[in-house]
Length: 496
Ligand code: FAD
Image 1 (tube, protein in one colour):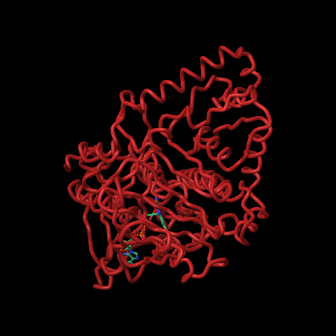
Image 2 (image 1 turned 90 degrees about the horizontal axis):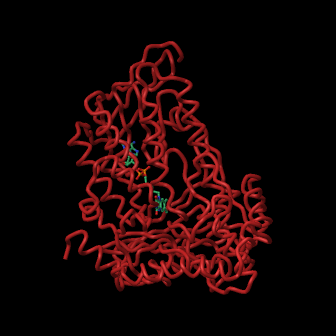
Image 3 (image 1 turned 60 degrees about the vertical axis):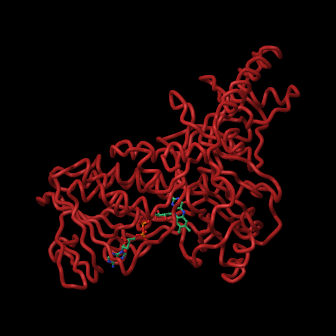
């Protein structure tokens, strides 16, 4: 491939789900008329139709695209999200919150958890959560935009509507949409790259760079180019889900719920007009019929849709950019939606591709760098998800006993043991989840450090009390000024 003159001016996106339109909107807006951008999607095949909970970086993606937030929220029926409430993960009846905020105040040498642990040793009983604005606001059902972006948030949204919204933008920016089923992916007989997509109608779409957004089918990257797949089912054993939508019961809360059950977990995501619900489970331990019964037995509000049964295999495409094809979205791999990371991975891949957009020839160095960085992202997220299953006291079912006994990646073992021994967490290589996320989830799952940084000892009792009291007071006072989340959404979106 090296040395051949290839000028990826013609970019073809296969698939128009959330991934396809996120890619199209960003490329069209950023590259404008310098590229000839075509997206092919099949109405008959449709999209996966799930994906509702997101994480804060999506705010930046939308800003980059010049999207007005209120308009976006109206179009996608979005609510604000301050984090995830985890029920029954450490043990049945226990709950903890993983928020998007910062807890307390760090010293440059030591995270806030060290000071909190020191205080706990000295007999203080306040919860770690009391020092986090986002947790307290979420649990009281409150939200507002604060000056200096003092409250970190993301959205709960209808990703089908998001794709539709982005489609309008992308088409406005010059992207061309073709409807039809791709029946053949034509290879260049000389170099083995993809030359064209051929539709049922016989239409042939040639391109220089192809983006595979065909979802789990992975029509280009796997079915045609055989890029390979790393299976992570041994670390993330859930392989099935059932999704359905219900009417809202009560005002929408600014958080997603993840409720563990004896063979997986259940989500509840409140949007403006309805709630998304789903059961994620491991088919080795729960049948489809029992899973449906369990889901139907634990939902609130009238059911609005037929159940959507989904199967998946946790893992990652071995080469996400292979030859002249880049896989984005479900075609690039999948990890269950426990920490709402899939749409984020789409965003990362699209922005990364834009940074590495070839000027002329596709560079093997770019391909290698892209794959390396994507791989790092996925491995780090994988470790964070595995933590939720591994670090638990649950042994009450074969599923949880499997999780307790399963070997975990060395990278995760190092992180967990370092925290257990010293209370320290380090963020490496632009890792998505920062120290506070790891601390909240590790302590939430029951890992308590045996020690803390000696610098915390420097504070006398009265100093420590003042330090902690001020932080707690700030949180309490700020939350008291916040409006109810559901009212704020109505006012902000102008939908009253
Ligand atoms: P799809 O939506 O499947 O789109 C594929 C596109 O390719 C469609 O347009 C289809 O028509 C087209 N296509 C396929 N084959 C052909 C063909 N032969 N010819 C023409 N077109 C074709 N993510 C989150 O961030 N948060 C969540 O809370 C979340 N929850 C999830 C829950 C579950 C159970 C699952 C399985 C996923 C969840 N996700 C979540 C992931 C999220 O749904 C996806 O990342 C997102 O929807 C992107 O999907 P996609 O565009 O890659 O694929």
